[in-house]
Length: 286
Image (spheres, rainbow, N blue to C red):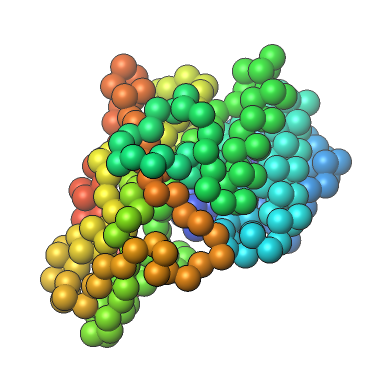
């Protein structure tokens, strides 16, 4: 199966390419912003028609949440216009599209799991653009039935700095860190997201909108504590703070933890966040 991964240098895209290349039945083509300007509609169509993939996976995104608050035009251009250009090109070429969105299109004020059909409630501009992209992609693909949307959150992986690598580095060097205790989510390795994408590529699940996170729920503080526990690092160096004490340009969701009841009838299930984290830390090379 020929798969085109757009956004090949990002945290997820880079790990996804390695994941699929380890499977013998995929021919993976990765492209990044130096290869394709996804905001150029004609260039996108030309590329899709030339490559002739059996699936397009859109991992490309403007993901600097804080910078997006002051760089709104570029963020919207990449996350909305770019996504829609890929969607249109897939309709033209009759190619299935897997679009990577985010659980932060939601922000609950309660520590509960959020249903996939809940009303959007983005807490920052980045999340606004991801929500709008979902809405518009569903409009242009409603007749073709070519679209699947996956919503990861709090992802960490092997090829880019992330929250897990930060915690490990600081604690390993005996440095104190301050971690917010009033933001809840579902820490998820890129490997788990890749496995969920793999279910779709192998037709184990139908087209639709899916959580691409682990199960359970944790605060960032609990996440950091679990990292220290698994690796035997000094948890006393982890100091809890409130979000208002953490200086950032963009507001973060209080809670963006997704309900996973959609999986059971399909016969598949993601890992819980603690098992997923332990598996990652066992294999990671920091």
